[in-house]
Image 1: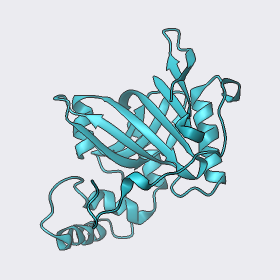
Image 2 (image 1 turned 135 degrees about the vertical axis):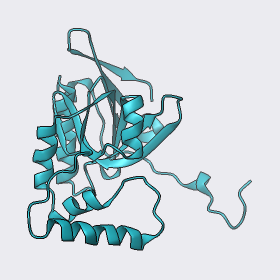
Image 3 (image 1 turned 180 degrees about the vertical axis):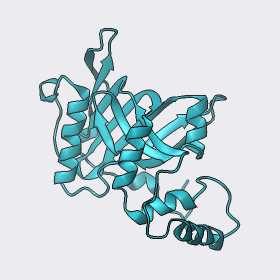
Length: 218
């Protein structure tokens, strides 16, 4: 029974009818197919089209999830950047596997990617870091990501120290900051359909590096 002072979530309904998805629609390559859907999301003006929920699990099986931004995609996988000393960095050091989920609500689409995670090369991390806005570069030095702060002033004081340290000079990539690459072992596409009979098509990597495509029950 719903309490009168709470939102009645059971009555909220959305009927998906924008499009369908058939096997013939798909590119044989999951990375090219994901690139196609990313382009569709950008062209549709979707807010934060590269945002993905990254789910990990500790060695003991404790789950954790957060939203990160995709910053690269190629046949080797999906690339995102963070502090290696963050919660996710420590978890990935112990259990280097993850699942990423994109949700483009305006297009009634989701994508789920599962695979092993490895650190990108230092050269890749430094090259990307140089493209970041200067304030973001300074922020990467000021924040000890996931560590407890006494208050906001503590963080602002660290930022002031970093500004003084680097002055107007170049801000280098912090030694414990960099990228991860999530390999595409499985990639599932989800297209909303009426009556909750959604289209779900999944790529699965085979031993010869090709991908099998299967339709899943909604």
